[in-house]
Structures are given as C-alpha cells and as structure tokens.
Image (tube, rainbow, N blue to C red; front, top):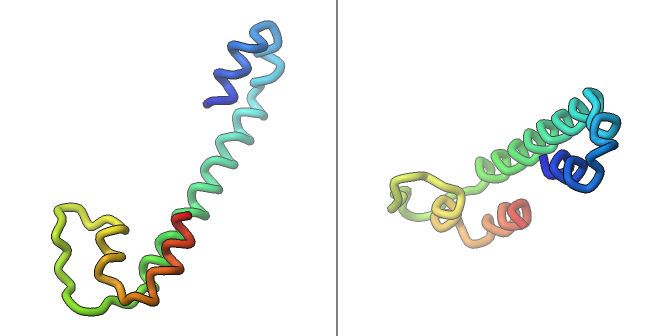
Length: 84
C-alpha cells in the first residue's frame, strides 16, 4: 500500500504502468507469505516454551508478553529473539 501511494504521488503519469495487475499480485503474495511465515514461527516459538510456577494469566487477553512472564527463565530468550 505504501508503494502504491508512493507511485501515485511521485509518478502520477506512470502510475498505470508501475501498478499493473502483476505488480499488485506480487506484492499481495509477498505480504501474505511473509505474514504466514512470521506467524508460524512466532506460534511455534510460543508453544514450545515450558512454563514454571503458576498458570494464571492476570490479564483479560492472553498475549505473548503475558505468557512469557509465566515461562521459565531460560525459555524466554528464543521467543524474544523471534520478536526482535
């Protein structure tokens, strides 16, 4: 979407040739693929963490940072590496 806006503002006369159907399909495919890969790695890292102590999450939503507070100390580093 940002490239679309860039092409529309900076190259308005060449917009139709830059943003053709093939370019849009390639950008959408790359976006979906990278999002699915990152989500899969993130989910696998979260589910491979071992938890120590209490299993009560003191939050309404069970987000990744709140799950990492329950994890054992050595298990958090891999998931933090995925986040970074």
